[in-house]
Length: 282
Image 1: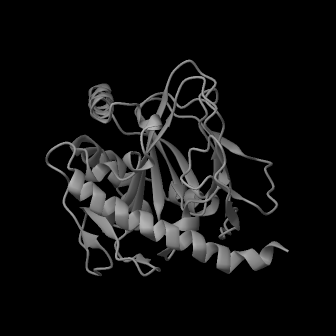
Image 2: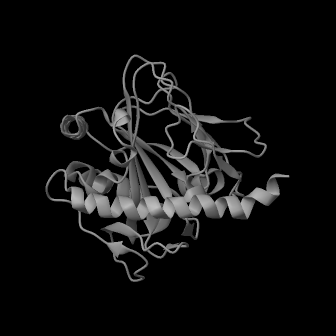
C-alpha cells in the first residue's frame, strides 16, 4: 500500500466511494487556475459556454492538466485501488458558475463508457471549494453489490453531463452521502457508483476536474479503437492506442483525434445501452 489503509480499501469496495484526500498545495492549485484562465482566453469564452468538446479530454490538450492527471498524490491512492499499471481513459472539466442551475441527475459513469471489467475509478479534484451550497457530489453506497442500472439519455436542460442521462429505475436515496471537498483536495468513486449533484447556489465558481483512471488490462467493448494515456507502470495488453502528454498548450490535432474516438464510442454505447436495457423498463 502506498497511501491507503486496508480499512479504506475495504470501505471503497463496500461503498464505491472514498474521500477526502489532499492533492494540490496552494501553489499547484493556483497554477491550475491560471492554466484554466489561459485556456478560456484562448477559447474566447468560459468552458461552460464553449463547445462540449473543449470540456472533454483536456489532458490531451493542456500540459498543466496532463501534469494534474499524473500527480503522484493522486496516483498513489489510485494505485492502491486498481494496481500499478494505470491509464487515463478520459478527463472532464466539471464547472458550475456561481448561482447557476447546472446539475447532474442520478447516474453512473459506466453507462456509456463501454469498458470491461468494471474497474474504472474517477478522481474528482476540486480547484475551488465544492461545498453543499456549491453543488458538490452526492453518492449512494453500493452496499457491496454494485450493478449497472438502466439510464435514459434525456438531454436534460442544464445537465452537466454529456447526454443529460439519468437513472430511470427506482432508487433508494436514503443514506446519500454529501462529498464536500475543500479546494485542492479530491474524492474517488467507482464507475458503478450512483451519484448526482445539485445546482450551485454559492457565490463562487465551483471548478472540478474529473479524471477517469483504468488499469491497463481493462478493454473497450465497442468497435472503436480508443486512445488513452499511460500515467504509471506498463501497458502489456495493448487495448488502447497510447499517446504522450502534450508539451505545448492547445495541441489541437492530438486533442481532436482523442476526442473524436471517444465521442464516436460514446454514441455507440448510448445505442448499445438502449438495446440492452430498454426491454427491462416494463
